[in-house]
Image (cartoon, rainbow, N blue to C red; front, side, top):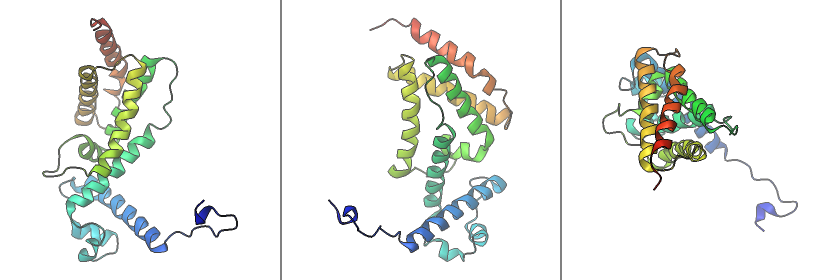
Length: 205
């Protein structure tokens, strides 16, 4: 039994400096998203960002040692938002319906925030690669989709690749041609039905 678990032991007290630092980082990331929506992802100015969070620009490097590190934090934050956006999706016993709702959520999520979509799903920033820690959050979301595919009887790698390509096509079309709307969201059921029909027609190995 650890010291913290001992009866009568004092509860651990969070490090106030760590709490303040985490809160400041969250504020910086939030303001970076706001700047990206105004000026584009690549147009984020560290000087403007520092002004928005009441820091001098050199002080910003105490939180992020480079602009790519800032993008990495935004990537992690965006994927956490995606996980939260789909957290209430629970199996209904109808795999096709579950996949349709999953695809609809992905398309709406991308459509609601074009810059977030670009960072998460497109190679918009030259030289940016998410860190293993940030990418692990994206993998958590991919695993959520993989579980739904498994429930629908889809497990072959090439079928999963096709599914992700179809999802990407819908999201890119929605973002490019009807951001904030539902023109391609409305195609989710047709796409899922066609996909599952094709997969089920393939000969079993």
